[in-house]
Image (tube, rainbow, N blue to C red; front, top):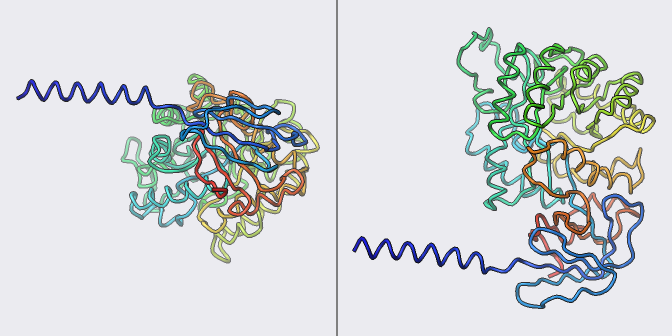
Length: 446
């Protein structure tokens, strides 16, 4: 009997492998579409685009002959716009919907289920990739990659690394002082953020996040809005501590990005070798010039006034939020004036309502940029920054473009966002097809 069972198991395994090998790749043919390729200022003339598996196989002005079998899906574009999936470079997948109190005190399982639902909504807003800059997103990333949950591809940073009293230190007063070698606090156990108060501690915490699967490292180099014990004007890490993080990240072939608003925090981070600045809303012109001279990335966000509503009226957090928001216009003007390498993100926290405005925030860049510049920033430019992860990049291949051999993250838009950027504000209506990695997650044309 044991012999028979072994043979059955062996035959079942061989049959399964053979079936997998024989299963044909999915094929999707977009007919009669005008393409925004992620870089150009104008749409192409009508084209046909063939996707095989998860790659764009062919783009042609002439009809593409293909096997019209049951495995081939034909999508008639009828002159609609085909463009790359959108990329949000400052996202917090697990921090979008819960309040800070719910995150610290709530059930971890529930938090992850809520984050899974938000991930699906993020994808259906047309954002096929996000760079997660703080939070325990490793499990969610794996579930999405394995097809268990529908959501964007995630480039995770893992826990935000902060200092005692820095932005990201959400410990309660009774948890201070911290004893050297003492137990991790609830905040640290959850993997949202972790305290490091010396170069050696910084190296340790960076290496831990890399071990867990971080694609880049996030530190808080200055004060922040959401942290109750972190004034905006403070500078946190010393240059030696920042250098320790940069060294540890570069040993793994990746980079450090830092949360920083003020000139002092930004300039210290650049001196330490940091490759990317998050926010920069309180910087001055001298700092903008330094960013330009050193070729540093600025990953900033068009914060709306309504974002302050995530914090209670009269609270210090709301006051700090309004101060940062007031610096948005100046930051983008400096970025344009000095031709900074600028990435787009949203940094939405604690508000499902604000998350629904993700595309609207992208469209709001029309105060400073043309529609072509906005779309380029949110596609090929953002993809260029993602590539700084080097071999830590979990999704090798071309992202953010519609080109042959590029990864098939595609949106079919009912209209031309190059002519009407406000189409991004209503993805439910205007994004008629959403494809990620060659898989169609939405198709209202059928």
